[in-house]
Length: 132
Figure 1 (cartoon, one colour):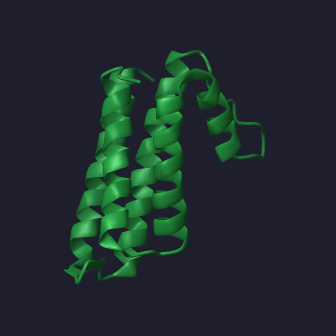
Figure 2 (cartoon, one colour):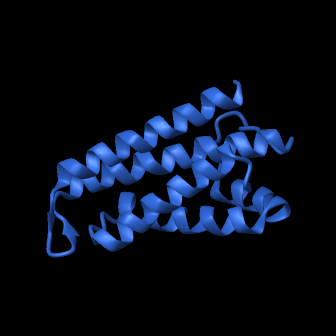
């Protein structure tokens, strides 16, 4: 795949995540509907993975998925730790906030989820503009 397509796809995921968060509603510093928060966090994190895969591909460090296995967080962090510490820190924070806290645990605290979304935007735009 070409870089322009994959970054466009990552941005589309992020846009869909923002749309899902809007459906959740907000009350007293929390998003109201856990279902939409989980959906938004999972979608945003998927966009981050698309961007990170593109970054790794551009550095000839593509993660090859083994048969009947998934790519792991360790695959991503080990490759990023050798390439770019700043991107690794952003990715690690996005993983914890979006994937673990938002998607798996269903945390609805608005400031935390908004920080995760901001990290996703920074990762995607940073990969796009080659800032990382």
